[in-house]
Amino acid sequence: MTKPTMILMLAFGATLVQADQGADIKAIQAQYLKLSRAIKSKSVPAMMAICERDFTWVDPSGKVMDRKTFEAMNRSQMKMPGLKFHVFDFKNDSFGFMGDECMVRNTTTMKMSAKMNGQTMTMSGTTECVDYWRRTPRGWRPYKVVVVHETQSMGG
Image (tube, rainbow, N blue to C red; front, side, top):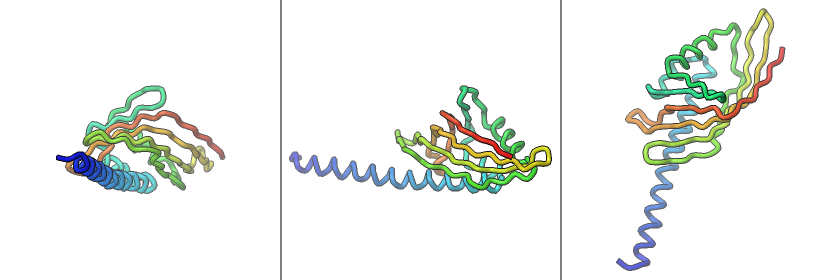
């Protein structure tokens, strides 16, 4: 094999890898859109259907919640009187692929309102996370979320 042929083959292979990653990024972004819609509609079953069975959530202090605890927490929160999500958007800052896994640096922006003690309260904030995804027979699924930083504000 000549050197120019080898260079062309390597360039073609790199193009194929980038094309595959592009399709994978679109598939993961579609899952984020489904998650956003599930959260806005307060559908915990739809949210959890996207997550892997071994899903874990790690808060900024390092406390780990397993899937069952995370689901129970969300069910409780979604029952807040008058709860309405005005904004719940994911911004994918970067993707890092390694085989059938992907690490996504993500910033979530949220604005919601709920009734507390008969008064409507608003809360807004941003959350910076590193989300870990796995390619499965059912498509890309998150299996771990590590919250790096949260900023929240409340008003009445």
